Structure formats: structure tokens, C-alpha cells
Length: 277
Image 1 (cartoon, rainbow, N blue to C red):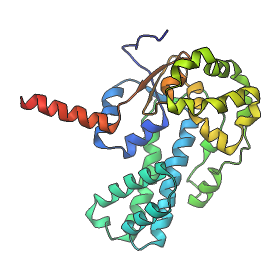
Image 2 (image 1 turned 90 degrees about the vertical axis):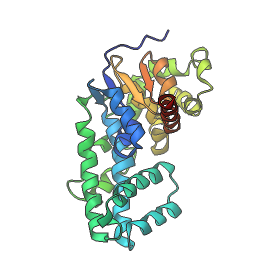
Image 3 (image 1 turned 180 degrees about the vertical axis):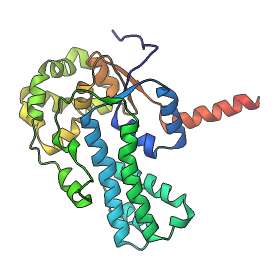
Image 4 (image 1 turned 45 degrees about the horizontal axis):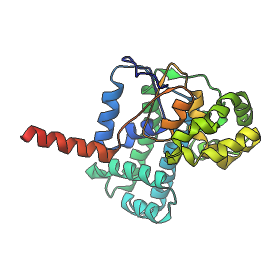
């Protein structure tokens, strides 16, 4: 049975929250800030890895493209044509939006590159500033240690996954949880959750053979499950992703999914109508 949401939360910030804190629409940023309020927030090193792979790596890619192109606008055009990842495109759009809000950067290539460098370092600092600490590192993903200290080229090498880790052991140690999130009578109410349902066949395979979870592609597909497992029961998952609405309850853990931008915009319109009456 689902527990009643506690009045005082210790939040666990999942990757989507960290990204929207940095590049989200003002309504999303406000919703995160209002929800967190003054409550302590934690996260995992695996989330930190995801943040570095999805945000820092993408910003570095943007930096390199701006170096090659004439302007930030040309770099945006390149990504719109070349990028195959919706997530990457969203991050690039967020970064370009931040640049274009500063008039002197619209056509100044050198200033734009300097601004991207600041954005890269500030994104990492913002991540640290948003949390009180990290939870126990069960997954032990070595890529979480990737650093920009020795330059962007070295970071690109450090963040590249080669599946040389102990994630298969992680799945072995959490076999009991795997059984609970794949048990047919328990998962049946969650099959309408597409984000979870798409992951379920792979979770079944990992239950049969833990080594299946230690491949580059499969580890990325199972990232949400890894994150949910690592979150302590005393915390509440804060996320924008639907998969956790199934993963967390199946692990007897709390979750709060924040509303989408479209929902927040509709809520804002409704409030304006009420105020005008």
C-alpha cells in the first residue's frame, strides 16, 4: 500500500530535475524551487554521471561546434540538422537561448566561446550547490569521476563508457529488488506506464543473467532503475520522468512527479482567468 506523503521531505533529485533547474522554462524552475523549498536534497553519483554525460558533454560538443562555425546561430543550425538525440537538442537550445539573451554574444564568436566555458563550469557548481550530499554509491560507476580539470578532450575520454565496471555485481546484489519490480502480479497495474513497460523485458533478462545489464546500451536503458534502487527509502524521489512512478512504488519508495510544462502553462492561464473574474 502506498504511504501517505510526509509533511517534511528529504528529497532525492533525479537527473531531469537537475537539468530543468539549469535549462528549464521559468515555470519549471519555479515549480522545482517551490517544491524543494528549504528541505534537504540529495542525489547519487550515478545521477551525477548522467548529468555530466547529458549536460556537460553536450555543452562541450556545442563549444567545439561554435569553434568551427561562424556564429552561435550557425552552431544551432548544425545541431538541428545533425543531432539524432532529442535530449541533446533540448540542452543545446537551452544553452543557445542563454547566449542569445545577451546581446553582445549574438555574433561575437570569441565571447560566445567564453560564455560556454563559464556555463560548463557553472553547471557543475550548480549541481553541487543544489544538494546537501550524495547517497551511498552502490553502482560505483567510474564515469561519475570524469572531470574537466585536465581539459575538454580528456573529459571526453573519461566520460566514454567501455562497460569496464561492476554494474553486473550491483544487479546481483539487488536481485531481490529485481524480483519485486518484475513480478507479474505486482507489475500488472503499471503496464500502462509506457516508460516502465518498455524497460520491463530488459529487467527480466537481467534477473536471469546479471551480465546482461553490463553493456553500454543496456546500462543506459536501465539507468532509471539503477537510480531508483540507489535512493534510500527515507528519501522521496523528485522527478519529471514517468518511469519512477512505477519503479519507486514497486520498491516501496516515495515518488513525486512534477507537472509538465504544458500542465503548468494551463494552470497559469486558469489562475489568470480566476484573478480576472
